[in-house]
Amino acid sequence: MSTDGELLLRAIFNNPAEDTPRLVYADWLEEQGEHDWAEFIRTEVAVEHAPECPDYMSELGRCPCLRCELRRKVDRLQNCPSAVKWRRLPWGASARIDFRRGFLFRLQVTTAQWLAHADAITAAHPIERVRLTTWPEWDFNEFGAALKGRDRRDRLWGGDHSRRDIALRLLAGEWPRIAFELPPGFVTRTAR
Ligand SMILES: [Zn+2]
Image (cartoon, rainbow, N blue to C red; front, side, top):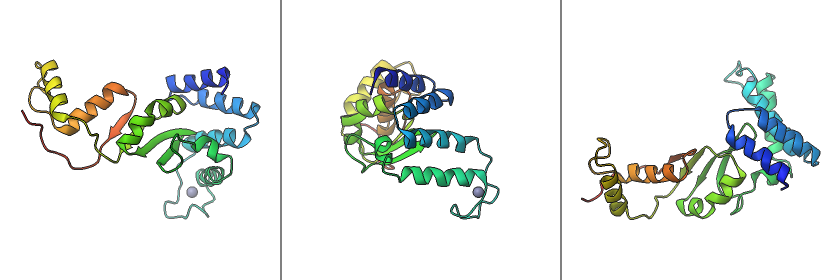
């Protein structure tokens, strides 16, 4: 990717709530000959602004409303051969991914996949949510003790930390813009 593309991408990362940087990136893609990719971003942005579908019971394939029409177009673009370019992930297409407003927004991966590829993923996608399907294999007793010592005066963190709290806190420290989800269970408190 050229420097222009990287700069435009960075504008999206710095203003994730804004549509304009995304549409500017789409124009740049168009100039690179990436018509389908550009159209995918524009259509996904348009979906967000289309009125809610008036008929919730209708089938997506049939409803004539603007929102459903745009969603059908998104589906077509997601299934066209060029889609591999914007759906590409470092370990292939096995992960569950969701797009919003033209860019990868949510990702479901194992902790091992995330830790191995987080730098590459976050450099290429303005990702906002990551659902981890496995628990990190960290020494929670050690991390819990470290956090406890650091936050002695903080009431919330004054006692034992659950492994969930510890894991979410460590993840947030490393990737502050991303909301993480962990698998259910593992509610055991750390040992003293
Ligand atoms: Zn509709």
